[in-house]
Length: 303
Ligand SMILES: [Zn+2]
Ligand SMILES: [Zn+2]
View 1 (cartoon, helix red, strand yellow):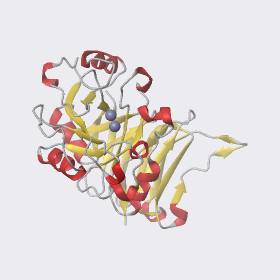
View 2: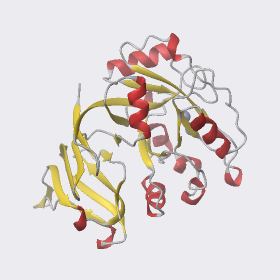
View 3: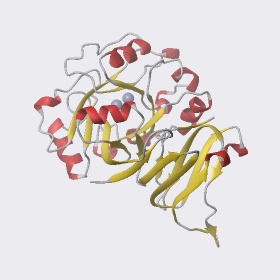
View 4: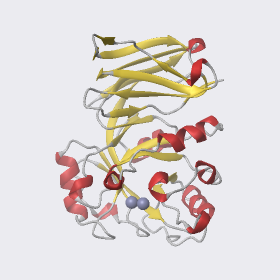
């Protein structure tokens, strides 16, 4: 199993498991074309460790499924009416199988009902929905947004960095998921979330998600992500470049490594930088590999 050296400012450095997760999943219980058993086989065979089932307005009874060693989570996608006649798509992770509030009237009611039963709520694919960052920020108690959603590729709206950054600049410490939102085979394995957990138990996975101990990726992987004594250190699989972006100072972002040589990128696998050298605000690291695939850290507070 993959491991990562993980440390947040003030915490101790720990070796954590890295669990590959698809946290937004549709099945034949709503409008997906695959049965839950097919979904389990597909993701198990692709090396995943965690699946959150999130059919539209319907909770899967995952305790009745054979997860083939993966940790299965019961979730749901909720669609209350939102601003300007646009329905919210609220991705819920970790609700009880008998969760009853599958048709909430408002976005806030949806989020509150999920959080009140111990779950986690994210604003799914805001770009696809046509939601403004200011509208996303009206929801209280969401854990964050989807920064990447595979199923939105086919209308060219899979990336949500713009909305995320506006929210971060406004001081919202939103975490970000990459998900397949699988309905069809074309959505399979486009982006996933790497959960840095103490174990693969349900409780440790939910705790890691609530604590922001994860990152989102389309391919590149962090092997070390440490913030300690004002120093940010990252190690990762070979990438073309790494950017630290944030608010205010130094033109907002740092291109970490000037690796262009003779018009070619020189691959990089890590950096160590004083946070005083970094932009202020809620920082995030963005990696990009030679195939143009992104990887996103969760925000790091640098005020
Ligand atoms: Zn949706
Ligand atoms: Zn969905």
